[in-house]
Length: 215
Image 1: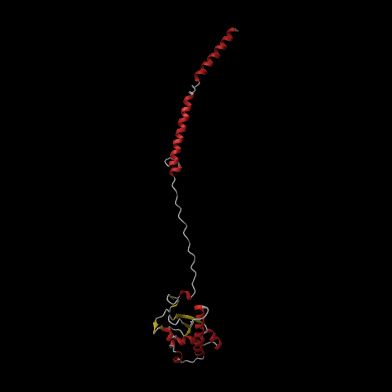
Image 2: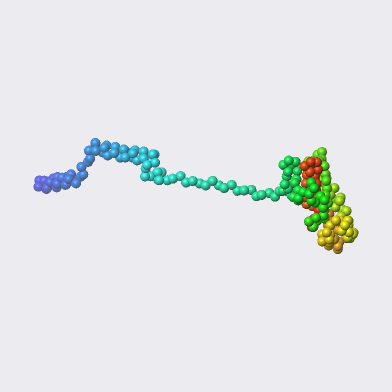
């Protein structure tokens, strides 16, 4: 019995020696603090580099991307009225003729039947109200009265070139438009007028309107 107990005690002692040999020695406390301090210093230095832009992180490598400014789209052009496209004299703020001036007036003033058109000229003085628009309406109405006489000549087939003061080709063109129509229908067709040109006299401020039969 005594031998058995002695053998067991010897086995336990041998196992304790072997376990003590396999355990790694624990580092000293002051070594652990030094390692932690070194790691903290390295992290602080790396943070300073990142802030100053010298770090190796993504923040130091990225560059700002320039975004182009959006191009402003142009609004579609709005067509101007017919009279807005006419040249304007800065001195008298009135429309300027597109035709040559002859003896102080546009060429159509002396020859309203020209360029293949049958026309008439209306002249209006400055109006008390309404400005240039009212002056234009008055001149147009006066020109229509003169043009009505030419219409009656064409409708009645009064082929009198001297009376109309128009070339034969132009007269035949307008006659062909009304040759198969009644008198009432012909007058309606030939009542389609248009202002071909206009001019404001810089001296008298009178507005001259050249009214023609539309083709």
